[in-house]
Amino acid sequence: MGERQPRFLRYTAAAALFVVTSLGLGTLVPRPLVSSVPDTLAQNAGSADEIRTVLLLSSAIHTDLALPVDADVAEQFAFLAEDGLDPSQAGVSYIVAGWGGRSFYSETPTWSDLKPGPVFSALTVDRSVMHIGLAGNIDQAHSSVTRIELDEDAFEQLLESILASFSSGADGAPIVVSGANYGDFDRFYEAVGWFNAVVGCNIWTARMLRRTGLTTGWWTPLPALLSASLHLHNDL
Image (cartoon, rainbow, N blue to C red; front, top):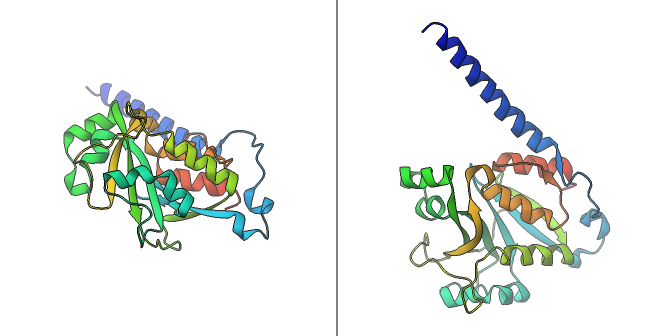
């Protein structure tokens, strides 16, 4: 018994060291290693009309992307109106988009709703969903908000990548998950890909941002790591 306990402690310490090292390297090592895209702020200095400000919204375990709404963006997301979310209605400033595991994401609007089943699904493998919400003004000075300024080409690439994350039905339209919304101003949709906590929602967010030419850490499964890597590897 005496020998087993030190061995268990050594294994536990080794596992903890591996996780900490992986998280550290995942943040410090850039992805891609070499970026071929010039900094959009420097490229568009003095051209404020060509800059679109996207917001990275971070909670303890999840990130969303808030897309500023104009007529063109509202048109690209016009399918939302058929499901009760009209992005062109008065008072809408942002479309907020996130990706995650169907069970945990749709069944856990608050920590008080946490249940063993969705947690087990998140830690193993689960189907994925897109979560879309409409928002008014967002306080960009809040500690949970990161401003990301993109030129028009990068912004359009981001929109295309987000829209490509939706699964489509036989009619080509995104498939709404009936009855899974949190309230009146959000909906869940079937999404492309499978979810696992190791390659979860924040990995999707990082991938979306890399499509714009930004650099992230190689592996950033937590919001704080993604945010830190963005500031480390980009001029935000």
